[in-house]
Image (cartoon, rainbow, N blue to C red; front, side, top):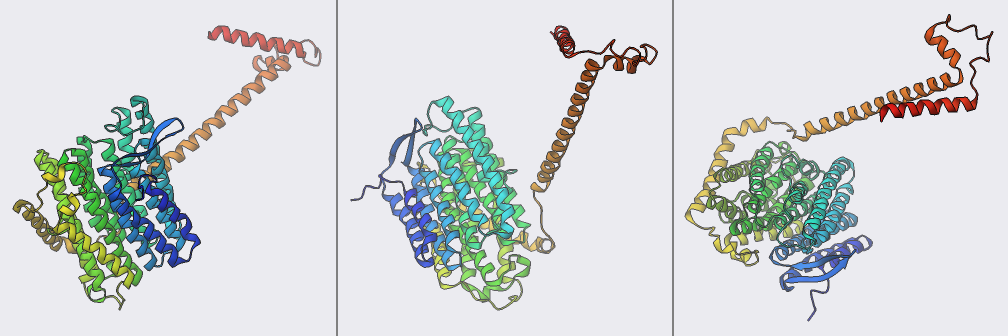
Length: 576
């Protein structure tokens, strides 16, 4: 039998990413899908424990660490990676783009299977590089968001690296052992990871970037960075942090209601990444067994339905060429397969009973209620209403409202197979959650009771509130144009602030330069021509005509140097 601990799966996937652009398009995509798919049985079968413990630059590191958290992430990362590669092939993505995407998958897998902060940070930074290249490869309108994406993740990665170094100073090791060190390390880690999980105020890179590249690239982007961030947050704060939980609740509300105001399909979906990640962050922040299990279950489920939503939006763009919901309508009759896949994904993300989001989102909400965190509970409930509102809007304008704008074809055969396969998993984990509970880390799954009367009524109540709310505000929503975010403020502040600083420093330097040069010239003139200097200061009557006694006050080189030394000594005496 093959020893699965001899090699981390990142190596296999990364190798496939490197050779993919050098192979025929069909062969390369097939190898890429197989390489990502292999990670699923590999993750299921590999024994738990730290494997490949080595020294790197004199530090103890673990290149392949298997426990409940990393196993769960490896399974879903490999599963959706294989599906996304197949979707890329059938959506006309070229070999180089999918190669970058597969490198992004590989580095994310490397991050979650690392057994120490040094390995995690190493792959974290490679993940940022590969995803930036994935965005930039599309060119055009993706270039500028790609730069902002790179800057944001460069800052986040630097903060996380600083946290890891501070942790090493405090703990004497980079190995995972009870979370990140308290004090400055924990704050730095929370902020650094907060960039990836899109804390409010640190989030604008997400809706800025994800709508920009190729439709297949957006599927990959929707999965890996934010969810690797949730994994890292669970590693850093295994006991939870209440302020992080409330940040998650605020994200759930903010992301859902800003998404409601969007008309660009992928921008709407991007804000809902922030909203749904808020539930995961809340679960990690609460820190109880049920909450952590719910947060990680929501990671798994979210990857399924969010990738499916981006796939359905991608098919609409692929067939119609439109991204604005206001330019769409009536597509349910023209694109029934895409409409079915979207409906399943929308009901899943909204937490409707019978779909996977209902199970995992309910676990986090139940944990908040169990811990008597009433304000957090209300935030999570309000976020649920906003989610229903958003996807009723999406579905109404894209698939139901009015006649089809033009005759269009449905998803092609390959796209349909991938979308319906992922949709089937959303239903499977919704009606049979034990299939997911069996691989969840910790003991929290035992506390989950998703099909209680109260929980089912809660899900139905949120759906009713969302439907009624949409009917009441539909006309107002139809008049909403493009909505700006907080980056509209701080981008201007940074630009004009930096501009003022540069101009101010330049003017200050010029003033100092003028003063120094002028002062130096004056000293030289006094030393070389003291008679003229005295005459200029005291008046022409103080000294005789210089032509009559030209040599009387003319100084030589030696006397000049002596005079400068005397002046400097006098200044030093006065100063000290």
